[in-house]
Amino acid sequence: MNQAAMGEATSVKDKGKLLVFENEEELMVALAKYTSELSEKIVKERGAFTVVLSGGSLIKCLGKLVEPPFFDSVEWARWHIFWVDERVVPLDHPESNYKLAYDGFLSKVPIPPGHVYAINDSLSPEDAADDYETGLKQLVHSGVVDISAVTSFPNFDLMLLGMGPDGHVASLFPGHHLIHENQRWVTYIKDSPKPPPERITFTFPVINSASNIALVIVGAGKADMMKRVLCDEQHSDLLPVQMVSPVHGELVWFTDKEASSKLPGSSLL
Ligand SMILES: O=C(O)[C@H](O)[C@@H](O)[C@H](O)[C@H](O)COP(=O)(O)O
Image (cartoon, rainbow, N blue to C red; front, side):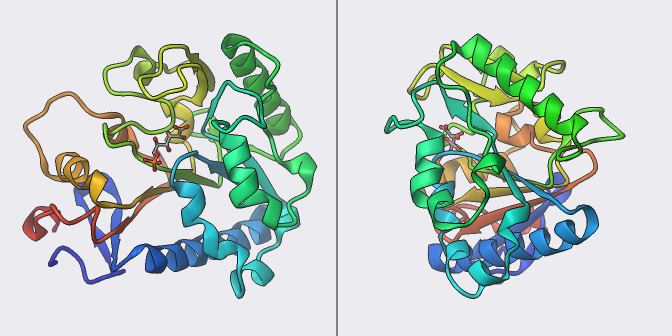
């Protein structure tokens, strides 16, 4: 392993900062530290901390935040929770990202229920996307969510993303026309290659207007894709994960040794 000392930052060409941890446990501690420090800084600056969650393995990786010392140091009452993507299923359905986050994280921390912005699960995908976008506009109006002065899209404080083994992020999949959506804040998909097929998702202009983006990628199943994403310059079509590129924010990759096992050191420096 020579691409980065464990847990030390390596800058990955124009792709942000790469952190490689010995194991998932160490990654979880570092992710909790990063999140709690950002929360402290941003709450001081603007009185609120807007956090966007994904589904998938990310929620488990947030596990240390609900334990001391992080649990006690975070001003949970200032947090506002959003989803970068959500499956259009009832909120108590086993495939709901809300349910995953609630069971694994939100039920364990005192974030006011009114600060947790789940989708309206009684609507069609089209209407649920419209409804979520309308809700975001109201929160911009009330000052909870900032707007980027550069892009005019919402500027979330922290976006916590996972990457699928095919290189997707949120519900933005390789080769799907939605990856080029540049007007809407929230859109819908009815033919997601990853089940369930009906979802809503933030668009790339919203993702890339965030102040901080953490891409959390663990396990050997992601190693081939990590190599392609960070080292392979032969493919001209960008994968969704390669389109994550904050306009005025910072991108940090939290990975473990297994996910980074196929990265040659020299290509990263
Ligand atoms: O609803 C979803 O399917 C997720 O939000 C999705 O975008 C996820 O973040 C990635 O697929 C990575 O998931 P894993 O980390 O579990 O591979």
